[in-house]
Image 1: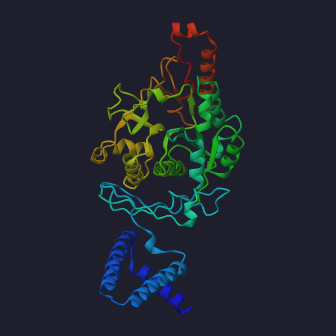
Image 2 (image 1 turned 90 degrees about the horizontal axis):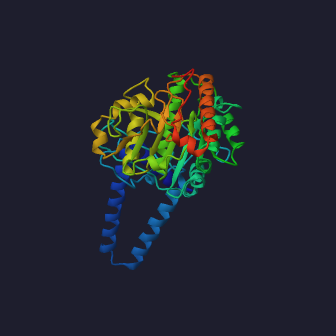
Image 3 (image 1 turned 180 degrees about the vertical axis):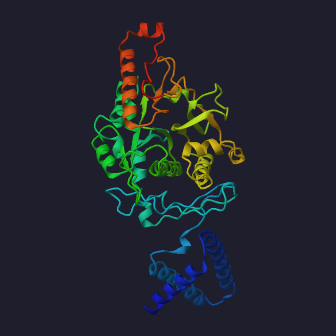
Length: 418
């Protein structure tokens, strides 16, 4: 017991000396290196084999006692990758994922601890060495693995209870995949990140065709309708960016789609192969590289790589410099920031002729991939005009193929929205 208590005292002293994570990392690495040098010198200077064996067993026993003396080992944090321009951020302790399978809400990505200086500061991103419990795949990893396409791409949407009620937006969203042109097989790659328990339960009722993940937030009730720009709305939008950052860190590409988007054709043929981050627009200025395009965060395709992980961390961190703004507003502010060029992120904007919305409807149903109920406030208004758009599409699909192609078909919406 004396040795065990000694190990606890050593551990407590270390904790008291380290004021923050970066100091912990630096001192841990430095101390590890110094200890190795001193140990090496003792071995070289020692000519007594018995002393060498005694030293070896003493070090091993001390390490074992230290390991078992505390549930938190400060020397577990080592940088396993480093970025020159990574704007890392602190994961909010209020953001905790809980699922029926995980009571403590931990995920492999969520267990990463980050420090930061300023938005564009040159800092490094730290990960953690996995403990025995962390070696098991997190619930998020399991869901993503099941849903992923061959290239590790998933389709993700976020929902709360208000959007999953019977005959509501969720049902319209799923129906669009069923009546779309070759879109029904994509349902098996859809991951619904449910923001509250009610939405998660309703998602599980559809689990035979989609995948469900509980993305609840400690201390926040997202179940009601979050009115545009309300406090809950802003929390929900930034929770989404935080979550998508974790998905990228786990190595998965994603198409993020709001649930008020109708899917009519697979979009993949219209994505730019050289882009890291491509996003739909409220208004498109006929040039996919023009930063003056008006992006809409409700639909984007993002590849998992070093550049996009840095970008999403930067985006999330930038909310602090722009309080009261939602993710789309902040994106419009940071898209010109030199940091984007510094990390080499390739951004493309998607043509509304293919990825349209109520702000700027696509003109030709022979080309359209998606239709978004943007520029529309209120669930009932969205349901009304999305239902009309779905009716337009079903009438179009009922036409003979030659008639569909011979004369352009267009929308009767938006009627209430827009």
